[in-house]
Length: 482
Ligand code: 6PG
Image 1 (cartoon, rainbow, N blue to C red):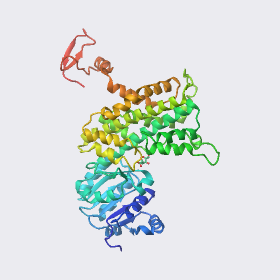
Image 2 (tube, rainbow, N blue to C red):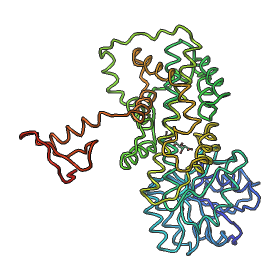
Image 3 (cartoon, helix red, strand yellow):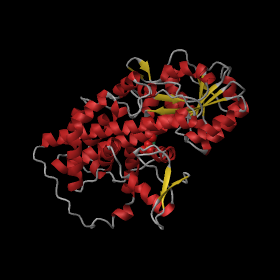
Image 4 (tube, helix red, strand yellow):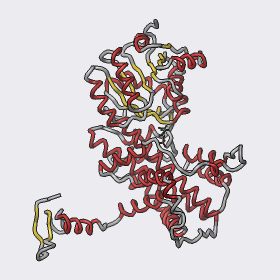
């Protein structure tokens, strides 16, 4: 029977859990207890990594005995029922003051529910976003823990010891209470979807507009990655486009079925934004673009739909590619601005005190959306923590000034040539909507009042009004009858 020598434990030793356990064990001051429902995974991990000096446990009781107080365990199992099952088992052997951390991609509302239920037992429950995939878990993820201030006292130093480091700072912060961590991770994933869709649209435009091969486009992305678009996703895009399929000798991207999968975090981001009344059009279009790509049965019968699209004529390839690069950057800024808007709206709705600048900081390293330009977002929120619209920060105004013409040109090119660019075009539409002095929403209010007597406000006096559309069409002042 192990004795209480471990300061942290990991439950769930699939790749992510094993890598996180290895990362923890590699840091000075950590002794890591490990447990997996099926013993073989534990045995495999110990055999493969004796240097980690793991403390193996083969029951939850043994796991609890191995842990120093306050016992702290990170759960790395599938979201949903498997996570609930592990929590239930840990609660049987943990005591008040101990800490259970859910490191999976749980839906933040589940985390709020779990945190409340577990807190009633005196045990702390922390929902923590872990970003960076398997490599990040091993070498340094971006970590987004929620949970109580009490749990952070113990967790903080441990998480700082394993997080990625950007500009000399660990990519971890106590995001906020209860579900705040998983909420922010969810938005991270939504931005990830938008970023990936924008990159895919840029690739498609260049491929179809210039006839360049994937390997040649990889060189374009590698060049972009040396500038303001430097980011993990741009970097790996060049790698994916360079990859040749061993079996056929063709570019791998040409033998992959063009139907994008999704585990659901993007959909959660959009559903939540709809409930919060926060437009995340770039993230939404990216999520729906994945759905469209997967509706093979509809695509197979729509190929002959009429189109007056003209083949994209590119006079100067370099100019065209620069236009696409600027359109990508301009649209990316919109997607991040919308993502931060959703975090702010979520914090207001759920009573979290989330520091947007800190979130930008911890996303600079370790996570999938890590990018050089997150330093610019960090700087923007450092100057004005209450920035209402990220895009109004001087740096982003300058970019949109510089990118404006290219952005519009690329959206026009995509429309006239029938190349789908939903994220580029919806981001521009959002940008123009935000800028517009008057929106056609006035007409919508009139329509709503006509058929539903939903009333409208006037620009020239306070109050709610209704027109007697089926009567003499005079206007009456009305109680606001939504
Ligand atoms: C990360 C990733 C990770 C997961 C993807 C799955 O931050 O490390 O985002 O959480 O691999 O979210 O993404 P899909 O929803 O595209 O399947």
